[in-house]
Length: 402
Image (cartoon, rainbow, N blue to C red; front, side, top):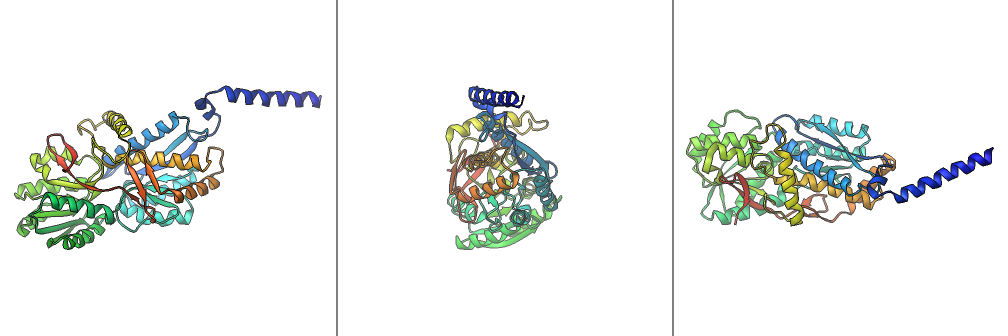
């Protein structure tokens, strides 16, 4: 009787093996458990729009990875969290993601959050990827990886182009959001860069994010009579500032660091101040028409992502959608997938082992090309050449300044 049962068991195993070989790759992927990755961002609060735009890009990346058979026979599965852009919530979402057995986490996004989270990731031995924070020096290897370009490289390149476009600038006002880590750091960076480029800083104006009344600030800037403004602020604040500057008749070119690049600033500012929106520039490295990586991949992404955005309730008014750095949400998923494939991770890999392999793979990445082409610095920060992008009020888009 035992012999018969043994034969039946082995026949069943053999049949299952033959069946597995006959199944297409996509069907075989269903036989392995999924691989969980987490994504946290501001799905509510002052930057909810940015968080939603980014989440759509992440989801497109996951869908494309899974459509090609997943990772070593397993599909990717996203566990999503809302951290409201709050530092303490960012920490909690990291711990939630670990408890949910995610192999890694994308986010949180802000410099204030990442400055706190990056050391924690190393303490917890939990791989994390940042795609937004731009304060220099806050990434901590080996468990933290920042694909975003920090201001120590992005700001100098953007300013160099900005000066070429406005060669008569001499007197500059520097403005910054001192509540947000990236904003506060950029105030010092802009002052240093201005002096290096022969610009005179006639005033430094600080404020806090979410400030409701920018009229006193606009009046102060008018009194300073600058030829240009260098600033670091979140997009919702930029809209309020632009309105007050227009009221005061201040019409000078304005260069912001990449804090104003994502979201819906070009559309909103074009509606709010009309042609004065053309005075606004940002440091960045892609528009709806152009990126530094695979052109065909980018064209396809922009089309599909834009269609997804317009299906979100309340987003149709922000037409056309501006990709900006939302594209990093797509790229980071493809990078994560490539690392997992190379390191032999699948849904059956024990969680602790998978995280260790993930970290080891992160340390090996020197270059990566998808929508954009990145070089990875020794600090674990991404690098893409930055440009001074400006708003075209007619198109309501960021465009590359020539």
